[in-house]
Image 1 (tube, rainbow, N blue to C red):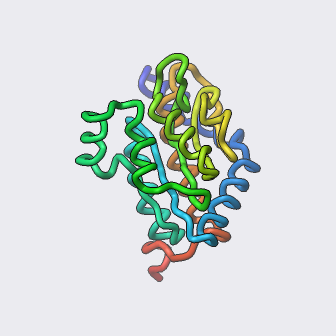
Image 2 (tube, rainbow, N blue to C red):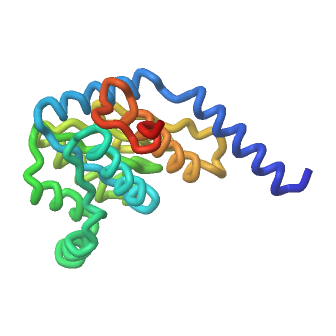
Image 3 (cartoon, helix red, strand yellow):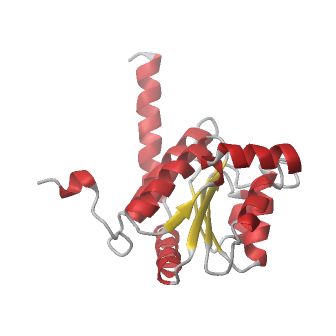
Length: 202
């Protein structure tokens, strides 16, 4: 077996291990929270940086279209986001965007992050400031994060921490399983409001 084949085998075995270790109760708690957001006509704000930002944009589509939850991501509007970064700074960019959206207690912030934010180490401090803003107004906080979950895990109402089964692949596994978890949630029978295209084609 070549080195590349050995790596593929190892990676997929790790993915299977992570799947077995996903916290089912945390997923259920997230579904409950999102049902409450929808019933109360609240909004879902999805935030992330790097790969998490890309996942946020995709998830916004799914939560709007499949779960019928009004959803937004600050990273989907590059003009506003970069203006806020340019004028006010990176750390406050997401928090000020949430304030501009008049975030309130009916809403929820969903975090996609590998580290979950760490103000002490100055890592993803914009996530930390955004979550502080959310908690100040009583909004719910959920997330799918890696490593130890960082600040997100400390303050979230429900969080799935992707188990770090290999220190060399924490980031790719976390970002990949963010997609697994949110797709599982939007397709959950209790949350799904609309059929997906290929599932509806006979």
